[in-house]
Image 1 (cartoon, rainbow, N blue to C red):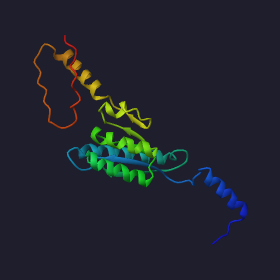
Image 2 (image 1 turned 180 degrees about the vertical axis):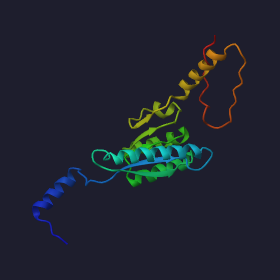
Image 3 (image 1 turned 90 degrees about the vertical axis):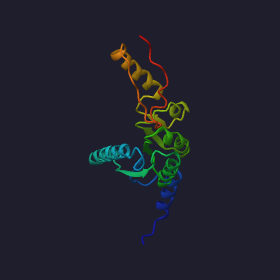
Image 4 (image 1 turned 90 degrees about the horizontal axis):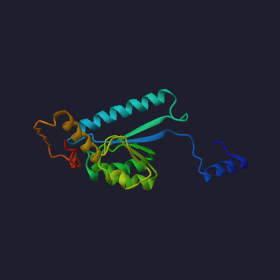
Length: 184
């Protein structure tokens, strides 16, 4: 074992006390639903995230650091999502691509906020997710209240003079599409 000189020990202590960490992989989390009724969504999200990570790493990573992906199954279930979020946080992730479902994203957002983890959801549409005002939470999809209006207006513009049947399968997605489109 090599001994450190006092100068190196002082430098190491100064760096550690200043919060400078050794170079390591950048950990990101993917809490996709890999089981349950929307597991097909999780499979697609994970495949896309894996491709993005591979592409970034092939180009040198981020700021010279390689990215390492940690995947967990949240099953689009609030309780399992909280457990998945706690695992990602304990593993040291700094960024989460997900959660896919609003019912998973909403209860995990405060956990990520407390841990300083950035969360970007590709598909959680419940307005509550971003209305809570957490600085670490972002979405890349329109909210339910916006989608309902846009969808209704689209139908009215194209088939406003005809009768239209709208079916719902009873799942959580689409429950927030309650606003009525403009009448023509």
